[in-house]
Amino acid sequence: MDMIRFVILTVSDSCSKGEKDDEAGPELMSLINNHFGNTSKIEHVEILPDEKSQIKDFLKKWSSHNRSDVIFTVGGTGLSPRDVTPEATKSVIEREVPGISLAILCKSLEITDMAMLSRSVTGIRNNTLIINFPGSTKAVGECFGFIKNVIPHAVALLKNEENLVSDFHGRLQGRRSVSPSKVKTNLVAQRSRVSPYPMVEVAHAIDLILKEISATRETENVDIAESLGRVLAENVYAKDPVPPFPASIKDGYAVISSDKEGIRNVREEAAAGDKPVDQPLQPGEVIRISTGAPLPLGADAVVQVEDTDLIKASDDGSIEMEVKIKVAPRPGQDIRPIGSDISVNSVIIEKGALLTAGHIGVLATVGHHTVAVFRKPCVAVVSTGNELQSPHEKLKPGHIRDSNKLTLLNLLKQYGFEASDAGIAKDNPDSVKAVLTFAFDENDVVVTSGGVSMGEHDLIKQVLVEDFDATILFGRVNVKPGKPTTFATCTFNGRRKFVFGLPGNPVSALVTGTLFVLPGLKKMENYENLRPPVISVRLNKKMILDPRPEYIRARLRKCSNDDILEAIPTGNQISSRINSFVGASALVRLPAKNSQGFGEICDEGTVLEAILIQPLSIEYV
Image (cartoon, rainbow, N blue to C red; front, side, top):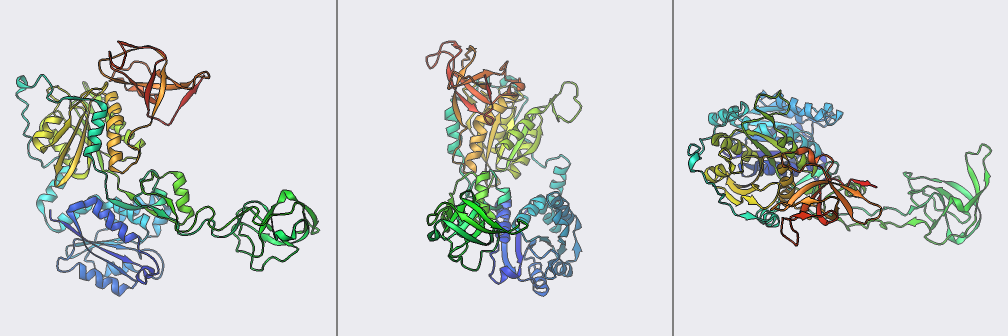
């Protein structure tokens, strides 16, 4: 398919006059570039006022003479009398495409009831698809996400590109228009009995991953409400000082400090949120003030209510008339000066910060409603095996449920990485190649489980090398569980892809996903801390050591007489026993047998390193 050519029109009176920055249009540009990459081109971007005739002329121009494939309009879809984008669009389109508008509406209503007030229209003029989006940056991101995957197919239909249409329909029906694999499986007697891949240590494997994977430079703007767990792509500066006015620290009375102690007339009240008092405070007067309220003109101190006595009030007790200041105030007492919390133009959050609830609170405080963050990697998870079926299906004879897929998807989600389900590859090269091809189409990283060991049906490495010309960076790791773990790279349609081939045993997949996949994804998204947190623990029982270093699952317990947490293994540690993870909050590293001064046993009470895999959950005894 040829490159998809996009045009973006922002419709806004205020943006067209320069009274307001257009943030939604640039956000849409970023989303298009990030999703479609080198298969797209932004032909033109423009801002126009909410004038129907100008919008019509623009749409006619860019949908004529094969100038563009898709025109996005941003803004002007609401109920205001000036919102005329839908009317302008209807006046130029030849056919409506109500399904796209309906999809946007239905999915938007799942987020906010306010979506029912949008009047967006979608239609076709000549061979150009015209789509109306609302005007907010947040809504643009959401709406684009709802429809982005149908755009290539829609453009192919409009261009009458039959081969692409057929290929897309085949994918929907579970078929792949993929040539057969080059891997031959009928020579089982000639298969290698010894792995051609050298054994690497865990630390070296992680170093190889972090060396090969580059941190993304691609960014996108997101609403701060959606920014939790994202990595900030630029320094954020304070637009305004905090507080923006001298503010009271306590509930009490705004006073003139030179009046010192004594009886004062209470003039009025200044509460948080009130407009600042216009008339300056006069000697002998005080103003009742609440925490956070602006200091009235003329006042230079606040006296807390505890340091006063009521002298006189109205008959009904609703108004204070006179109070006694019992302690002489100091100038500046209990006042937050302008900018004392945050000064204007100061850096409030530095580039590279992993945004937390605290960061988001600060952003809201200083008036930033969107932030630039690094793009998250697109990740797909693939399972392999003839014996696998969905956990939602009734179990067939000789089959097992595909637990690895859901486990890995949710492991990634737990650490802030959304991944897609790329299906199950059968134990034949053609199926493996087809599933990987489809996964590479849409993703930067593919995580597979199973098919990487020495069995005759373990085909991942062979297919990667022979069909995708992949480079295997490592194919065996000196670790238990997880020895056959594989990391590979290849180039697909001009873009670099990364493959983590994890073992098929459930525990092996989860341990190696934690050890190897998470640091790689963190590197791609520009995390500063790439490796999981490690603490020291004391083993609470004797363990037999394996020839390989072993990561056992354990609960943590705090004993009153020990500063080091106690690690309690969660039962049988065999690699197929996934319930060893239930209740575990750490992976404790046992040394290899006859290494690091150990023999064949690791004694009770030995202090070892442990990787935290859950928010710290500690039992106390």
